[in-house]
Amino acid sequence: MVPNRRLREVLTGFSDGRLTLEEAAAEIEGLRIEEVEDLARLDLGRAARCGIPEVILAEGKAPVEIVEIARKAVQVSPRTIISRMSPDHARAIREACREMGVSFTWHEKAAMGVLSRGSPIVPGKGIVAVISAGTSDLRVAEEARVIAEEMGCTVRTAYDVGVAGIHRLFPAIRKCLDAHVFVVAAGREGTLPAIVGGLIDRPVIGVPVSTGYGYMGGGQAALASMLQSCAVIAVVNIDAGFVAGAFAARIANMVGDR
Image (cartoon, rainbow, N blue to C red; front, side):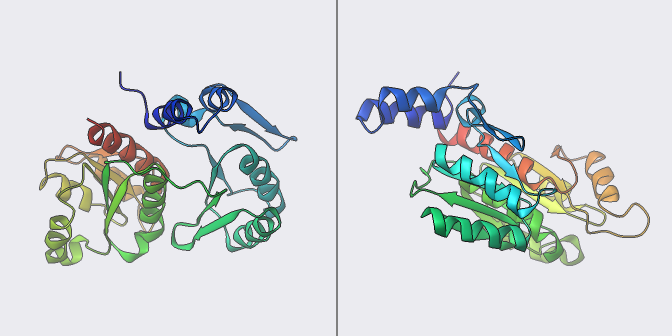
């Protein structure tokens, strides 16, 4: 089995002298947990263990709680990712980052933020394409894009190319043909992933989006349509852009590293 990207980075850093033995051991300790009072237990070994970074979910947490968790995370991890952030979360984190001297990138369309202590992403050879059926599906598509880029992939995007104007799809696919895997987000009837899956010879991950309304709205019709696809595709849960992007990045990184 080929070691995951993060583990190779740590071992190379130790070999090159950029990391001490203690630092390298801390990075690859797959069961490492950092407790944040009674709020959270950060799984800091996830990247080395699974190849997917720990991500803090802001949804359901007050801004002050997210700040407390992020302060701890950024002390022990060079990059900290926060998902499902509200503007209030972003304002609180930005102010905290100023105090800590930490850089903060706010991906507003994805509702995600990344805290960094100056540690750049090590680019790999994996390429992921992210396509959305409509502009209303953008937040979920952007969530997939951000996490795939944080996992070292190059990401090609093509948005608002759904079946209501199917002629828009073909030039969009053409510019993404070097991708190792496609993430396709669609709401309403959720047809687009099946169409893409019937046109290309790459893995396709369908993401149903809760943009539909009325009977079986809220992404239910899109999910049912994707599960019934006669094209061979994989399907994640409704609005699960993070899951689709992370899974796509794992595939792309494995292929790109060969």
